[in-house]
Image (cartoon, rainbow, N blue to C red; front, side):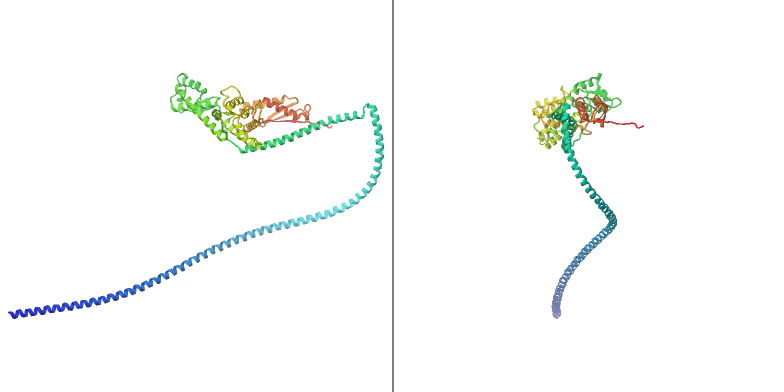
Length: 562
């Protein structure tokens, strides 16, 4: 048993030792394999490092080659761009050269044509010159022949002249003796001394020269008038060119369109209460337009007419139309118009560069915005006159600011002539003096129309500028009936003069043609008659601008041959 156990132990020990040996061998093999594997790994790593180094070197080489290729490509592109630019330049130069060549060819062709024409002209001219030379030679031959004949005549005339001179001396001696004898005989017959005869002769010469003297005076006056007119036209034309204004026309009535025809009844009111209250408070006439939803406000005072128009428009918009509301609306509109008048006056004074005007004078000036004269807005007209006065004053060496002030304020009386008695020049003169303006400015308002004394050149400038503004075509319009009456009055004035046969107003009344009887009116009196007719027209007729008077005298002589 123990032996069995010993054998088992020996076998177990042998097995354990075998296992240990096998494990040791296996571990050694594993270590050897690990060492081999490490060696292989190190070799692979070394090979990989070498490959990486080779790849890096190859990559660097490739980068260098790529950069070189990129540089070469960039250089090639630059060369291509330069070549393209050179080609474009060459193409442009070629095109320019072709164009120049074509132009040169066309110029050469035109020059050739011109040279051909000139050759033809020169040929014709040469032929003409040859003909003229031949004619000149013939003329020279004729002249030489004529000179020889004239020389012979001159010699003959010289001889005859000597004989005539001697005869003249003889006749002069005899004439002096005969004249002395004749004077003695005439003095004895007439009973006049030589001095008295001389005085009578000079008196007759004075009478004969009177007509010539009048003609010379008339010619001198005409030259002076033409020079003055030319200078005046130059000054006025420069003034007109430096200022131009627009004009608006207004009538004596305003039409208001109603929302519907029922508003007419509301405006009239019960038994006409509303319309009577409105007309009495506003000082206007309200006219109902038949067959139309509209009313008209008529009044000669443009300010009252504008106040009434605004008040009625306010009443129609509000819808409440009764006497108390009418008075309220009229008061509001009056205040509004007063503010607007002051604003218009201030704006006009500022536009004309005029300062120091009294507020009430500015308000009066602003009211001219609603005032018209023959359809011409008076405020716009005053502004235009102000600028024209300043322009002409500058040309004449006067004060442009004072001239502009006189021109702007010359018609302020037209804002007062509906409220006060008197003409607008007188009312304007009084208002200007009342509100602190100088006598020069006030006189421009008073005397810019005839009938008052002119105390300064600024008044004359205001009158001239007023006439320019009023006479400009389209600035004013006139009633046809008044125009025809004025033309008839002008013709009647001309027909009232002695020797006038017919008179015709032409050019819209701007010129008067007068035909006179040649047997009753002499040439010397034509100018005097024309002036008298013009002066009488100025005194008796009111007209804008000027009227030219032309007198026609025709003398016909005839005879009958049988």
